[in-house]
Length: 252
Length: 312
Image (cartoon, rainbow over all chains, first blue to last red):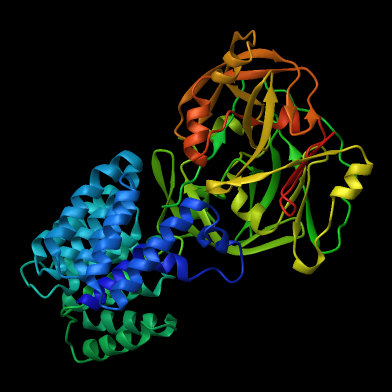
């Protein structure tokens, strides 16, 4: 699980630094061009290095300095949430999310859903699946047209380990809508649709759609998709055991 | 968190500053685009978004490239996924805007490749009013993210824009333009890809945001007060990205120098609150914005390679 939160941390800050568009203007978005950007990124890198070196004390110290330097920056609080979750300090992580909410509401209400998504994943890590579902739902309610939120909720509803929380029928609806909104061009969404179809016992459809997803995937998601295809061919649905976060946020 | 900013400037009685463009010259290592001038002095160009023609304005006051959300969807622009290096959202003053990924963006002979844009509900931001030009509606802004990346040269007078395509063939404009009587004013890049130049007015020293997307030049009320400008009320206003209107007074301004360039006397907007808004966006104090009513008649050439504004 720690690994997952390191990935979540990467999602919040490190990934934007690490990658840049090779053809096009994307590097302008990811470069540190001014002093504050650089300070934020340097601090983020330092905390990431602390975590990678398993030096939690240093990470905590650097994190405190980070939040102190940017007390009104919602992203700083979200990074704090990810770091605390990576340290299994889930209560602290939830406090960080609580602190991020008013900041993000004041600063950029449209991004409120991002906080709910992070909090949902913390709840998931704590195996509080009902709370996780509530937050995935809240995230989507902030922007019903955001197909990424719809996809994350659909995946959760289709694959959650707790049967009472799953809702395959709704997952199918959400995934179908998301696929339609993206003209069936997003392999990750089709993968989710297949998982939802399997959850409601529509294995023929699940196999068909998973095959489509497999034919479109070229990256690190391909192996997982192939495993799922084998499951559906054996009339088995897929369960996200204990590692939803990386998949939900980084691979989907 | 990325901080982004742009202004939309409106006027009740816009006047186009005319200058018939000559055939666009070719600069080795650069691709060129000829812009039109719409009624609100925008440098309007046709941009092909994933092959679909759309009407954009070239806007140095927009820190990122922006496209109307509905048009983005129609043009096949995908929302950025959660693992996007650009984030799902980009932030402007009070709101987050969804980030979209464009596969292909072209204008004139320039192929920008692909990259991130912000998707905006242009009805909210009053783009519809901006676009009342009798032409196609304005649905996007070509912002300073792209302009910076391709080291754009923007000739505000001839409305010709050049994008560097060959890093080895940078052109040095300063010596040539100096011979033509231009004065070079150094541009400074601020946070959010915004560009400022220094100015002085009756002992007051400040900085202007250089904004090709602004219909006219605007001064903060603090500058007007410090410089004892005789401002009178008007029916003119500007609208920010949140759709908030800011009423402007107008004042004759004499002896304004931008760097070492002395501007002829002309009337300028005086707008309360503009300094706070601009300063928050760039994280430094900015006292106004330098718009099309100065940039075009003063033969403004913005060179993002040498970070210069040339005026004459």
